[in-house]
Amino acid sequence: MLTLLNVSKRYGDFALQDISFEVAAGQTVALLGPSGSGKSTLLNLVAGLEPPDSGQILWNGTDVAGLPPHQRHFGLMFQDFALFPHRDVSGNVAFGLEMQDWPKAELAARVAEMLELVGLPDFARRPVDRLSGGEQQRVALARALAPRPRLLMLDEPFGALDRGLRERLLADLAAILEASGQTSLYVTHDQEEAFAIADRIVLLRAGRVAQIGAPEELYRQPASEFVARFLGLDNIFSATALQEDGRTFLDTPFGRYASPDQAARGAVRVLFRPDAVEWGHAAEATLKGVLRQRQFRGNTVWAEVEVQGQRMRFEFASRAPLPALGQPVELSFDPREALQILHEDGHQHQQV
Ligand code: ADP
Ligand code: MG
Image (cartoon, rainbow, N blue to C red; front, top):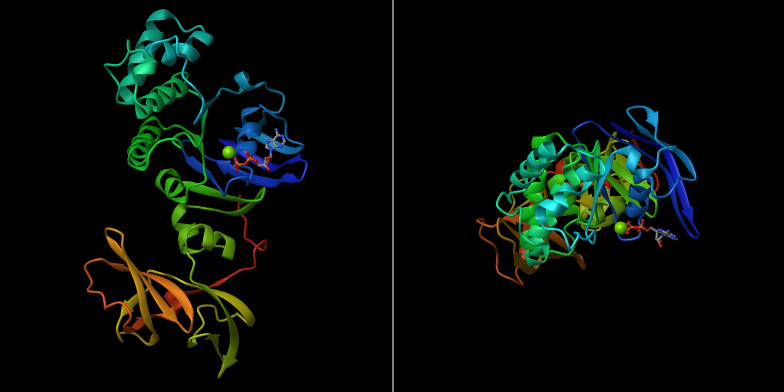
């Protein structure tokens, strides 16, 4: 198990501050955040390529600060971590094993096992410059996994590949990590990648933790407006929470609704969940607007509805019939499910 305790690192104007989280044995944790939020910096600290200014990095409770990178037994895989061009596929996969002086027979067996695992059993003698981008990344993964790293760290490993290939490799990688019980730390700026691969996500913003949790927790309960927007939840507006007859209501730009949080008071920011509405007048609360745009997304259709001058995006099952563009529409919803009060950015729950 990897544990980070209040890890900090400063580079000029940029500061990684007080980062604490755990990667339990066999888990995959994604470090997610916009470009420049400090993901690679944090990975470099864990790898031992740079020392932290303060804080502790523990493996099974023991501080690894004194250990050089190779003695940590952590594996690394980067997007631009090139294969060795003068070695064939098996020579590349064998590299880390040679460094550890594995006996020949065991080494050969391990290389074959790794090629099988990444779906390239017949590629051992191929020169690496004849491989496709996806095959090269599979070889890089086999090379990283071969020496049985206690922790595998991947930094945007599929960033250079096109979307379809990336999704396939990601699904394969998730299966491989699961099957081998590999403990790993996966860096990405792409929330869909993080959702697809991670047991837990550490979302970073400008060097600080914005939220930690399972993918479903972040998506269902974003801790702040930043988290909501980063996850593509953009229907956010200002409202006033007020009490009437002992109950709390939200005065919003488009109507007064029961508050999902009875303790809310005064000015608040509210998220309207895109997937919590139905066409028509079915539920207790409704919203009137004009359908401005629709986008077919496969299983779902995104509908952009203009409500009181504000555009909101809602998601519907694509089998449901859609009203015509430019038409007045009515949407119904349960305010306790559809509305969420967001906390101020920087005012976040953290759990280790
Ligand atoms: P991310 O991987 O999330 O895109 P990085 O960790 O690469 O972000 O970078 C975070 C910030 O730290 C950036 O502003 C970057 O310029 C700075 N930084 C990273 N490494 C160094 C370094 N070795 N020297 C100076 N600044 C650095
Ligand atoms: Mg980076």
